[in-house]
Image 1 (cartoon, rainbow, N blue to C red):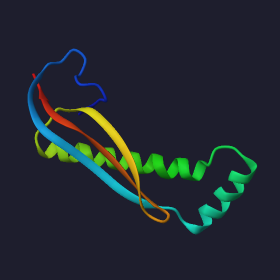
Image 2 (image 1 turned 45 degrees about the horizontal axis):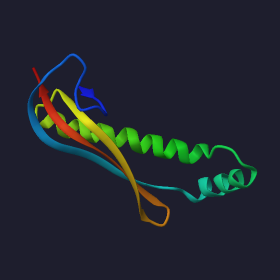
Image 3 (image 1 turned 90 degrees about the vertical axis):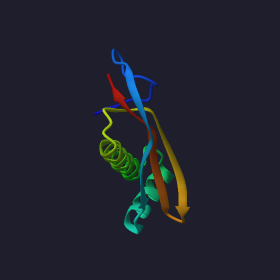
Image 4 (image 1 turned 60 degrees about the horizontal axis):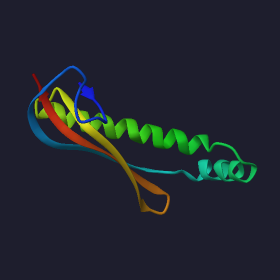
Length: 104
C-alpha cells in the first residue's frame, strides 16, 4: 500500500476516493523513564526515551490507518497527516489520518 503526504501517488491516477481513514494510539510514559528523562533534561540533549515512545506510537497509528484503508479495498492513502494531543497527565495520543483511494 502506498502512503504519502502528497495528494497523489507519483505516476498513478486516482480512480476512486473511498473516504477518510485514521489510526490512533494513546501512550503513557512510565515513572522510571520520567526520572531518566528528567535528568537528561537538566543536562541537555535529546530525550531518547520520549523520542522512541512517539516513534513507536506513530508507527502504530500508521499501521492502524493502513488496516482501515485495506478494509475499504484501498491501494493508497494520500494526504496523510499526523496530530498529537495530551489525553491525561503523562499520556498522549498519536493520530494518523488521510484519504483512502483506489488507483487506476
